Length: 123
Image 1 (cartoon, one colour):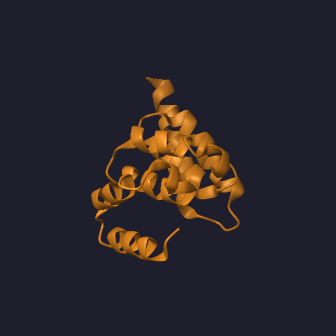
Image 2: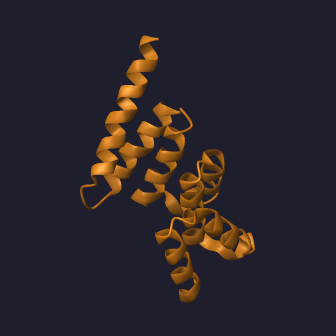
């Protein structure tokens, strides 16, 4: 990946300009994007509440993402906000198990997913 492109995307992210991240990455032919840009695109989709697009993008690189805790977290996030709590819980648990460090967000989303599942089952 081109370092100037990554710096540009990092700058846009720091400014919460997620739609510009999406436009920039979509301007690159899909076959040239690779895993890293696919994950950045999915993150930008999540940050703009385009959860179906994020899920689709992440699933397109699932083979590369299976061992990446952040891939599982981003997929879990998109599933959670798509009201697919059981699937989200599974992804957050995988994210936690693949992480080398404790991440309070993984734990929080695990607990929130469990609460949503329990609430849903009581209705």
